[in-house]
Length: 364
Image 1 (cartoon, rainbow, N blue to C red):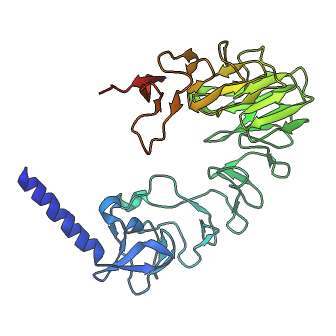
Image 2: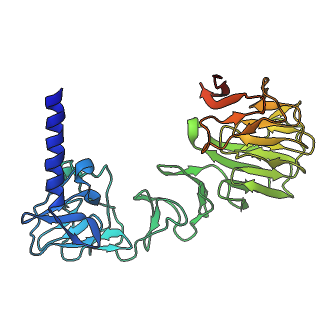
Image 3: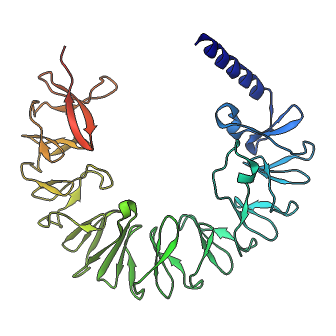
């Protein structure tokens, strides 16, 4: 045991000595260093945790382009690896996109200072024009274009170039049809595009009759809601709407259909597991009516824990035991528990199999 500790200590000391005796090549990159007459690629200068690569670069002609890109008289380097497909003389980063005179390049894979250079090679984006190629990430993540085509995740997509437009983060269209932008591809949809109203970054309304929302998780896909009318539209947040008398949460009508749309508002984030909301008459937890809750005195204490003048609530259940009036959340900088009351009761906020529980702190 002691020998192992000593050995590990020696290794750490030697590694520290090795990586400390080096010179950063350029302020344009914290990844390339000179040491013992050679160029090393050391990501962020942290070779102990992230590894290092001794390059084959010519030290006299070596220069950094930017970040993980560099060159010498014979090669372009990416992650310290000489690139096989690029033209050394014309290679450049155009707004951080690697190009040469003939090609636009991409990297697909997991870049690493410890993997073989065959796995750290740039590849060509087929048919992309390097002179006119630009990224459109401010409009839609992974979208780009050149003078004649659009590209999504570096793949050319078959859309009408002249009429193609981004509607929001989930939907795009051209004059022919509507498309869904998933995490992998642009997928055509069977909807007409004559009347498309983009509400926000999540929702579309088609011809004032059909509401569309895309839920990518758990295989849900597109959620479609038929509307009787869409005269008044109010966006509460990106995932929550009120359309006339209909409350929509994450693409679906509010579970309790008796909710009053005119006075409805969100009390806690609709994106989390603890979703509190209210109207003029009631409090709702995850769209379930809490009959006992008083909207006039109701307050959220922490995530799934709330109270009113008469009850403490953990989710949609009443929690009995503490003194309701004095029950409060504790400042964690002065205590190692979450809630307390004036009777000396103390509780931790815990989750158990997806359910929130208040676990009592044992009294001494």
